[in-house]
Length: 378
Image (cartoon, rainbow, N blue to C red):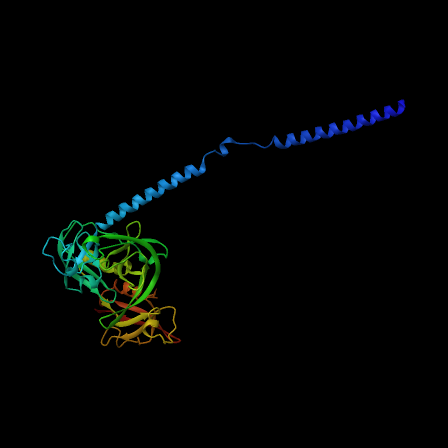
């Protein structure tokens, strides 16, 4: 009995020893493992994220809204009213004669009195119209340039030191960008109305039928910013105040579909008037269309081209007459500048003068040719 008890006590002592040993080993392991983990207080800070960030966002939105409002308010001062008839009073913005005056819109583009608008608002070259500034002063304007194909005109008034609108870059516009339209819809009560929207599409072609005449406007900017009668000729601007287009027409059978002419097409002409006081317009002497227009002209046409401009007609005795250029040719480039729209060709030719030589790269079926043409005066 005594021997058995001694064996049992010895066994318990051994087990206890092993358990204690294991616990010590585990304790040493965990101590050595976690003593190397260091926490640096400078690595983080505690704050109420939602509350702080929300306040910052609200402040930034409000600050941005105020900034945009300031810019638009400043821009509207550079927008003018245009009428073909002169009012007996001091301003064309007259409640009693707004219908008779056929009020339209334009905007100042130079400090010495050049006004940009639509031809259908001001009238054609050499005609007169009346311009009323934001301060109510009215001037007689002389239309110094116009083009019915793109419905644009430039009018000169005898004034200096005017605030003018900054021109943007319409080549870089993107669908979805925010824009604002400014104009004089309907008449006196709603002068300098501002509407907002987005750029809905680019390079649009529309068919216009009026007075038994059909025409096409190409390469237009489509917007859902509201455009009404009287808005024609007004600026389409970015939130920073830069003009990217000239408002021109809307689809009357639908809401939220308006169009503006890209500003870049008129830049070379404005630069010429600004620095020289005149503009000599050169011409190739052709009627041409880009691929977007062909389905309107001939829905059954088998013409199929993705690049270039289709030569539909060569003007008799014009610069292109008696050259190698033929009707049906596709103009791919001018002076190695690639062309896909008529506005791109117009914009380039506006930088040239009568007498300048250009080189056209054309496609005629499987044939490619290089044709030189000396530009004439339009």
